[in-house]
Structures are given as C-alpha cells and as structure tokens.
Amino acid sequence: MRKTRGLWDPRHCRRVEEERRIAAEKLFKAHAELEARVLERTAALARANEQLQRDIAERKKAEEALWTSESVLLRIFDSIPDLLSVIDRDLRIVRSNWHGGMSMCPSISATTIHIAMRHIIRDRISRGENCHTIEVFRTGKPAVMENSIRKSDSRGPCLSCL
Image 1: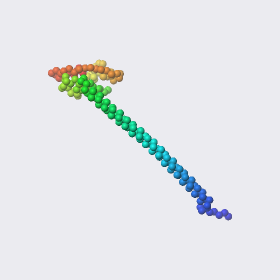
Image 2: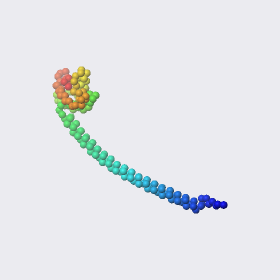
Image 3: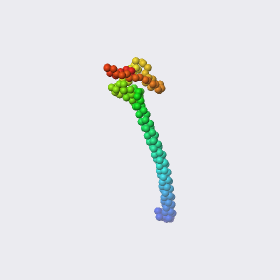
Image 4: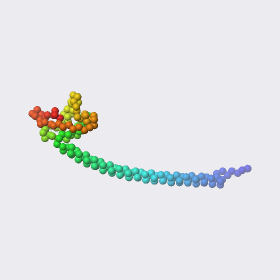
C-alpha cells in the first residue's frame, strides 16, 4: 500500500516554494516595470508642462504686443478730425470717433449721429439707392464715402448730408 504524505510531502513543499518564488519574481518584475512607466510618463508630463509654460509666456507677449498695437491704433482712430465710423453687418456702429468734425456742430451727440447714420443707410437701401456700406459687405472690397456735416441753422443740425 502506498503512503500519502499530503501537504507535508517534501516534493509538494518544494513545488509550492518554487511557485511562490516565481510569483514573487513576477511581482517584483511587474512592480519594476510599473515604476519605470511611471517615471517615463512623469518625465513626459514634465516636458509637456515646460513646453506649455513656454507657449503661455509667448502668448502673453503676443497679447501684450497686440494690446499695445490696438491701443495705439484706437488713439490714432479717435484723434482723426474727420468723422469715422465702423459699422457691422446689422448696420450698428461698433466704433466711431464721433467727435470728428464736431467743432462745426457741437450740439450733436454721438447717439444722434449713430441713429441718423443708421436711418440714412436703411432709407437708401429701401429706396434702392446704391449704398456704399452694403456694397462693402457684399463684395468685401473697401470703399470710401466722404460726407460732411453742415453747420446747423436755427432749426437744428443738418444730418441729411451724412
């Protein structure tokens, strides 16, 4: 009859110890690989972060230069003695140096000029007249339209010549 030694059999114990050793080696190797991947990804993130910091600094410089340039251009626009207006596609005045030419008609406000210009443009469109503003929006080509404000008479300012 054959004797069974079960769990305490030396061969079984050696096999279990060998399996544990192999499992421990695999776990150690997996841990080392994971640590290497973490270090690699951390380094990649650090490089990406450095690049982003450089990009942010570059954009801040560009924004500052743009703001300075815009500020200078707006001061030039506002200092031109002739009345200039920038009109959007809905015929709203988005920028105007409304004080241009106001030495002749100091009683006219910016709001009055904006409203008058909008009405004049819409009236021209409704009458089928050629409107420089609408033509610019259609073609994309710049147009220059020069008009002057006449001195007001006793009845008030003359805005029909806008």
